[in-house]
Amino acid sequence: MGRLRVALYHHLPPGGAARAMTELVDRSSDEIEHVAFTIDPGIRDRHHGCPDPLRGLGLEHHVEHVRGGPGNRLGEWAVTVPRVLKAERRIAASIDDGDFDVVVVHHQRHTQAPGLLRHLQTPSTYFVQEPRRQSFEHDLRPRIGGSAVKRVIGSVPVRALDSWARHFDIESTRAATTLMCNSEHSREYIWRAYAREATVIPLGVDLDRFTPSPDLPFDRSRPTTPDREILMVAAIERPKGIDLAIRAVASMVGSDRPALRVVHNRADPAHRRELRELANDLGVSLILEPGVSETELVTRYRQAAVCLLTSRLEPLGLTALEAAACGTPVVAIREGGYRETVIDGVTGLLADRNPGSIALALSRIIDSTAAIEPSTVRSRVEALRPWSRAVDRYIEVVARTANR
Image (cartoon, rainbow, N blue to C red; front, top):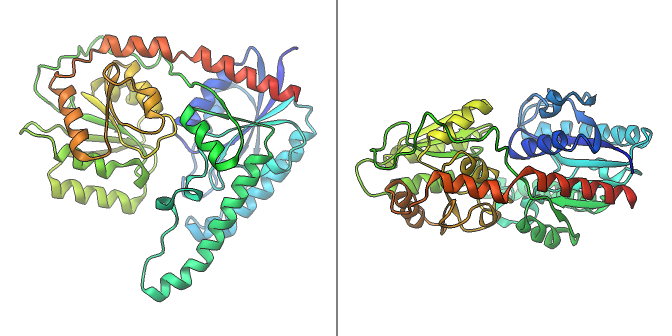
């Protein structure tokens, strides 16, 4: 079979999923001709406009322009989402008329599973980075504040909308010809949520871009300084567990408590205020750094004493791989995809979900008692997570979907 012609649809916010998509597209270009279809990235929504990550790859690009509603949740669901769904119907029709072998579909920012999956006649494979978790996890369901009367009245439309979104996501996901995912944890979650099997694409890390710095030798014996911080790379959102990280740093023993730096690409303003207040109350030096470039991100990884990951049920944990490729050990919660991207005692330490356990793991690495060396961290990532494995599996799934 010759080079596959693939339509690629996404409406991803910036982050690990967008980086992984870009790597797969770029590295499979000898076998697959991708043609990109997107919603106008300038749309007004809660994630704000951002450059499309695929723009630098020189792909043929089709953009469906959508005028967004007010930049709040009511405007999103009453105005923006209906317009996006209509645009996806038009995109599906355009793809079906375009003589493509298969459609590769990624998440949509509002409904998770894009609506065009329901309209496509062309075989499709949907890369499920994670299910729509608020449909299946009680803690992530919408909350209604105010008086008892307001909570009762307000809960009716919210619950109705959430029920619709749950049904929409399930039906759209089940409409895909095949599914891909990023980890064994995600594969199991997808089966529980949708009763569909997914093929794991073992995402890698760019070993040419994420490298240890020759100018910053790793010396665990020197005292903690501003360039020996604890690093987190996470959106300022409640499921990321940054409040837990602050409590863990506050639990560390000693006067040379390191600062906690959080590099993020989006933030919930209310939660950001809560985190600043918590850090101030507990005496933790908290640095919130938005919008760093990829070059700056590599520098942050290199400079950190340890990279901390506290997201609840993280589907994979690309941050763990990127930090390890830079020679920086990680401390992660013993759950979700972290159990697949962190080799306990080799590339970092796994901890229980409580401040004391996390603080102990952080102290062990910073105080050198864990004896995790940068060369070991880097070499294990090189051996276990090359991009070539992910690309081979990706091409296999796309070709199999086209044949079906």
